[in-house]
Image (tube, rainbow, N blue to C red; front, side, top):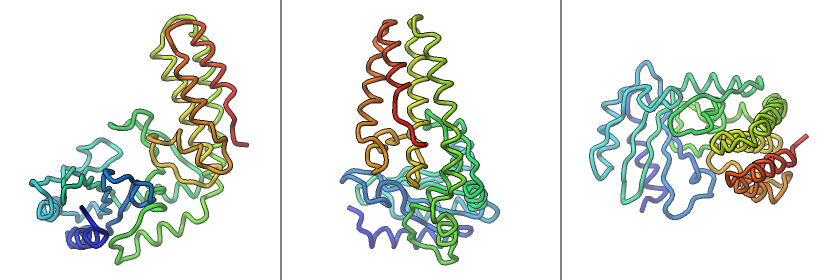
Amino acid sequence: MLSDADLVRIARDVAATPGVVAVALGGSRARGTHAAGSDVDLGVYVDGRTFDRGVLSASVSRWATTPVTIGPSGSWGPWVDSGAWATIAGMPVDVIIRDADRVRAQVARARRGEFAFHAQPGHPFGFLDVAYAGEVALAKPLVDGAGFLRESSAALIPYPEPLRQAFLDDLWQVDFLVDAAAKVAGRGDTAYLSLCLSNAAVRLAYAWHADAGAWAINEKGIVPGVSRLTSAPADFDIRVAAALSALDGSPEGARAAVEMLRTLPRPS
């Protein structure tokens, strides 16, 4: 079992790697919503010009059960620099590399109210680029000697109003997707219907989080998360599940699902 003190010791060892700018605890453990078996997300923020992946691999390997290799930049896809999965003291630890320059760029975009979703392995809806900003806003710094995480987080408090408005303005896509699903409701194309309707539900969930000033950085858990927002409907996730469950392959089920998604409450 990894204690908080263990995580700090590991972070300090990792931070001695050339090019490492800061190390933070992320994910559910940073937010205090983790379960006993939850992974430990260790965010390693680096200067891509000087970062030494070999040294970092050796550093993590000293703590891990088996040797760990940090892959080359882009080896995990275009929007996750790289990283490694490790087991330390019997616990799964995800070491995730974040390029500091890219983080700075996304913090600036978030403040301007700009965002986009990008194709990325492991993200079926798409990787939200300003998730980089959300991560530093939510992260628990373990090593931040130069103040990179502190300064980045401070720039995002309070939640940027232009970004909140941008997510609300994006809700036109919910109507577009629901209308697209309605056009094929009688064709038995359940896969396409489920893509349209689940996409619409996730976009709506992002908008609810933004309206509440709550950072959402991943499509995983975002629909159930709406029900925990004090300003959002408490049964949002139940209504989304009911709509998607109505897709039973029949035209009647498809039409019912479309109408259930169409009538979901929206922030304004």
